[in-house]
Length: 458
Image (cartoon, rainbow, N blue to C red; front, side, top):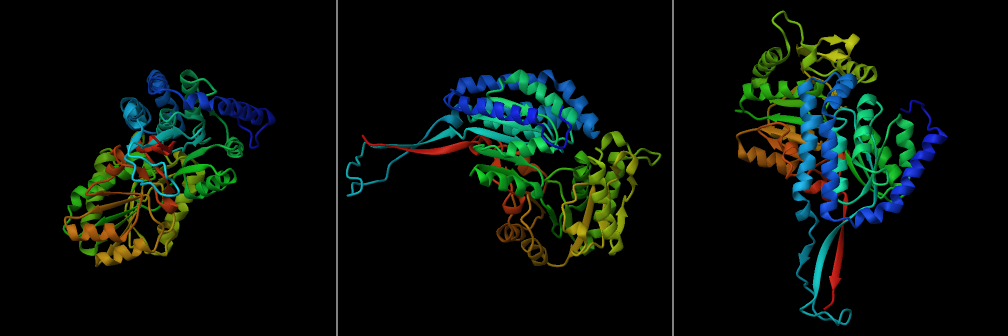
């Protein structure tokens, strides 16, 4: 594996060599049939299944995730996603037939009723896929499957924060593909920087908004199209009359999952003042039930650590700033720096000027703000960057529709969490600061496809 902070000439040459191979081979891959692509996807699925044990061991070593979480997000979800592409590829690849609407004019006198028009979905070419550390395989192999289904070549780079997982991923890719179709590069950020210098046709990036801007700037040099899956501050709106106990249980589970290091994890909550005490108590009850033993000790094998010391320190600074500025620790508030564990925490008396309300938290800390009128909540969200997700708990249809019409977000789940992400027949992606483009299922196939317009004169 590559460990240097600068790309060595050997690594740079290897990247250029593989890119040249894929550029030369892209037209063969573009012309591949649905059956040929499905065979490649089946080989990838088999390789993931064969290395399931290695995946679990590697991700645990990199992140201390609970095994059940790894099995779901890094094995089961990946294989199900690949199979979904296999099952639907014939339909997705079929041209969309269009009934021509033209009539003869001086510009096109040879238009006839027998003319034909269609949209064909063709591969973009050679693509770059840059994966994140929070779900290192799930959020990398999902795009890889979509790119292969659409008939592309691709070069792949996982984050250097998960070196063991990247090593297993490289083994899987080598077993499933020839390097002139799909290749994975290990190493530090310098490898990603070297890849971004190349004239890819499309770049798919999952990560922070800050790095997303750098990726978009690199893509602009070559006019590459991009799919940017970013993040942001995801709000939860609890309307009057909502089931507080049910919501608190969902929030406790969400802030436990992957140590709340997920781009669609609830980042802050709006609740009526009269409901706040019940929310705090119910959240505390569920956190204790989910994560703590009878002796009061947290079960650390049930919650992922914060990914590294830098992020642990970043979150601690957000927390400390909030406390200094008047926030109250209503649940949790314990920190174990020795193993990068943050106990699930709920902060109340939170105000907008606290830094924790200005930056994505990406940790099991949940700030709570109160409101009197739903218009206050809408105004707060309208004035800020558009989030990746928005959660509404309400039985008031008028309020739900008002929130939907007056706010913008990548996706929305009503009376639940994460469901708009889990439903693969919906597009998943952000808007403006939380991302551009979308994927999942058919929308992933489209993300890696160009819609080519074709018109036949008959």
